[in-house]
Length: 514
Image 1: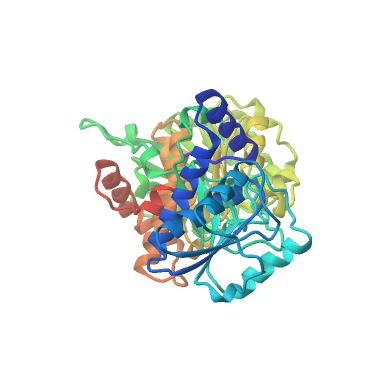
Image 2: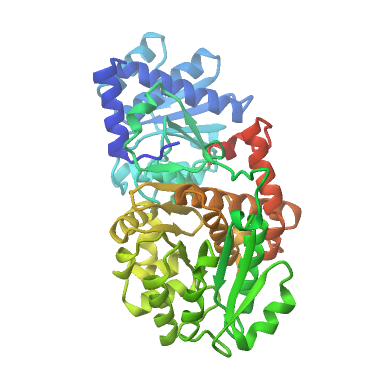
């Protein structure tokens, strides 16, 4: 499912109206029908509803909603705090009046209603709200009455995760054809409540050039094992990192790689710490490298001499930030010919070196998996700018440096060198724990090492990781989840996606939409 910006949605509307010939009032009727359907499903038995409508097309949608509710025998009062609408909204108001209904003359008491429908501003609005209408929004919020927003909560920008005060705090948002960025990115997504995407008959084929998509289970491809396969065919990944006090990061990555399906997993670690890894890992092998309590540059030659044994490399988990670490990262980026994934201090050491241009020179697949703070160090962008414009900054980075990016956060964004971005909404706040990113890196390098197409591997890995986290939380508790618990749920996460793809409804409808 595509995720659109306001100007893209406006262009899709234009194509549908002008080139396909579906009149705009028909689209408005379809939109209103979607709002009414979703509203009544989620608030059954509601008797008193107030529709607050603006002067544009969003207001027209709201007026149509009021009319449809009235025709169902529900009291749906219409309030026009900005005056009568124009364009298609005026047509809807005329129909409303011809049926014998009249808008309220005086400002209502919002607390007298069971539900408020917010149809003040849509995707064309540029925040912030000003003047009397900002007071109206504040009064609606303070009333405590649940709000259903039409398309987007009034006061938000469709194109960003940024919140502009005041803006409507919705319990339910019904949007049309495609979700907008404000429905997906945080913190604005928190103000949208449940988001329902309603089809209003805009042909999806016209959205092919939009570069943003939600990762949904039906869009995933699971790896397949041939009956005559063998362990090397399933990938032999090398995970390099670890330092005194941070050995657990590599261990968790290795365990996650095995659970995700790697035929063989080897950890490249400082020889002074090797006994720790030997005592903690069973199926996985170790490659002792020069260095006592952290990796030495002299270990790079050891890795490069045997790189033909491996199908992919993950570098940086628990590595530490130090000048020699920068040299290790740069030399491996220069000389490792196969896919390489940089995480954690692999990214930090690259950022500290200032040698980002080296990414452009690599011929092999390059993947970076930063969280927001690491990406800030890498790019110089503020954390706020990254969070509010997550898909844009990810796309720009991948295109500029010709690499794949997994930008981790409350929403995780995958971007590729071709400029496509994919958003995962799976996961849970319980995953805000140390080691969770190390688990993800192990999962991703495992899938890359199995020779899956990189974008497909990253999309699957990110989604699988989120589902495993949700399953672990369900089994345990939000506060008690550990990174290791996610590893234990990888098999069930695989099974849930597999069952869905086979037609067994083990992932609920909300999950299918992200």
